Amino acid sequence: MKLSLGSTTAAKAVVVIFTLFAMCCTATPLIALTAQNTGTGGELTVAVIAVGAVYLLVVAGLIWLALSVLRGGVRLDGTVVTMQRAFTSTSVDLATVPTVWFDEHQVRREGRTGAVLPLLCTRRPDGKLFRFALATQRSRLPPDELAALAAAIERGHRTGAEAQQATAVAEQLRTWSYRLPG
Image (cartoon, rainbow, N blue to C red; front, side):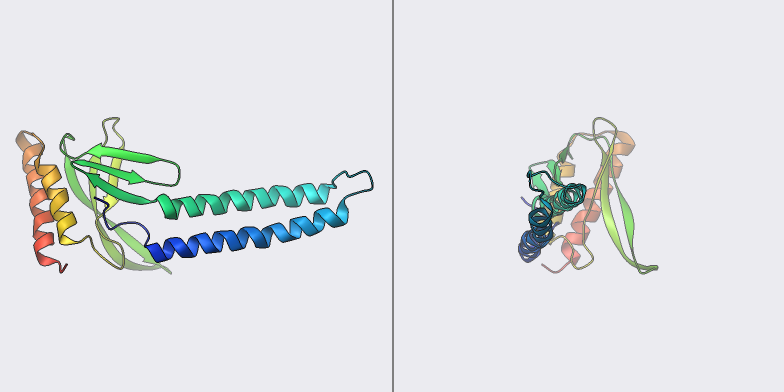
């Protein structure tokens, strides 16, 4: 199940169009400069090489941006949550991690504090922190996705304080799923 996090289809289309347009716009000066500054022997001048290097950096940045938007997102397959980014993806099994907990992220805009987004957190087997937002500034995860996350957490076999904490997190996710409109 793809969780409702990441970019919308419209945002993806805008990024692809912008990337193609920007690549064409940045290529035009390079082509003109190359045609103007190619010597009689066909060698390139320092200016053409410098502009070419800048062009390659701009294109690399645009490709990274486009891939971040196109690939970015979070999936839940059974009990495994996978977070995809431009060139990497990271997974964690919510049923096998010892602990899960909530945290929050305050969004700041123009020096002011904006929305507070809830985060679901755990540690990967290698010890690194794994967390993802349960909402964006504009929307929250739908009830069925919150309930699926709760079910994934509850499938684990924990004991003691870790079991109590996991149960509390799952119960809170279910409570949010009941209160939020679909």
